Amino acid sequence: MATPDPDKLMAKADKLTKLSFTRWTADWKNATSLYEQAAIGYRFRKDNEKAKEAFEKASKGQEMISSPWDAAKHMESAAALAKEVGHWNEVSDFYKRASELYSECGRSQPASDALAKGASALEDVVPDEAIQLYTDACVILEEDGREQMAFDLYRAATSVYVKLERYADAATFLLRWGIAADKCHAVNSQCKAYLSAIIIYLYMHDFQQAQKCYNDCSQIGAFLSSDQSRCASKLFSAYEEGDVEEIKRVAQSSPITHLDHVIIRLARKLPTGDLKELNKEEAKEEVLDENDLT
Image (tube, rainbow, N blue to C red; front, side, top):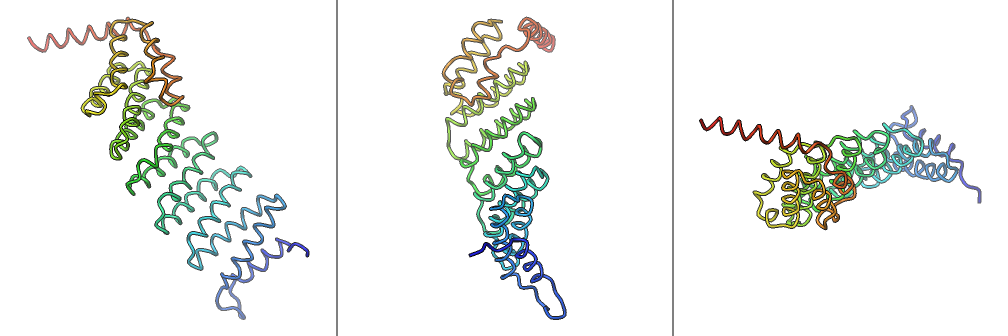
């Protein structure tokens, strides 16, 4: 039996969706079936451009016959094909639309997953858009009280920030991860996120911000009594003493080697600045504090 020509299927489907003197209502049910068949036919031919268009129309058809789940599935297929042909704006738009359709079904996990797929596809070509998609994917799960399911997303977004050398943003996102972990009582993940943020500030050679971060995180009892907190304390002591070898030794210790690889790589490069200058700055601050008392 001959395989139907997808071009003819598309033409027939398009005709069913257009109104005329003899057709007063669009026949979306039959048109959608034809679009789906055409999409499969084009994909078999490896004609990704036309397959993408057919899946997009099939998605529209499923929407018109009130089937948002199937519409979302087809939109994801269109997005994957948009990636294959390098239409990056469509990759973002299609995955966002798929996410919206899943949300209409009340399904937060696939809605978040769709955005994460888009983010992953865009990391190397449009990293800023990838970060936004990862962030939006996190928000969907956070709003549904499913923070634990977002941990891989926090990790991925942090990695992109570090690649872009947007270290302050990376640290902020790690602190957000820590708050999310606290909500779902994931103490180990929480403490690792806080230590990671401190390491990033030290990598930026922003000792004051690193200390502030440590002090803020230490308000949380679970962190204060953790191995990660003790590790951070050892790093601060080594910095204050200007002991480069001790900093390098602590950077090789177990609490740091169990962090994500992107953070381990930064820790292994510590210290990144002149420790003597750091101590001079601290001495100046101590003199200013003394003057405040007089």
